[in-house]
Length: 107
Image (cartoon, rainbow, N blue to C red; front, side, top):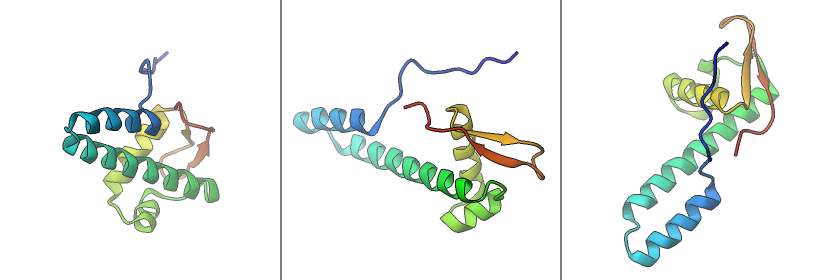
């Protein structure tokens, strides 16, 4: 039996906005702005991936990469995160299987 690590909290866009407000008031926002932008882009990409999988549960990683316009490695990293967060599951073999959307990610 394998155990999946679940962090004690999830950093949501709302939390990031609150932290950004604090840093803005301190005048130290530059690094946080870059971090916030990166996290928001990753959230948008995850949403695109989930939507595309919901439309076609047998879609290949290469197809996802081509549609979204990123590398297959980027898609693989996002899929791993989505699986670890409990929002997505691979059913069957790597080549012949399908994706199963399990619902909302842990947020």
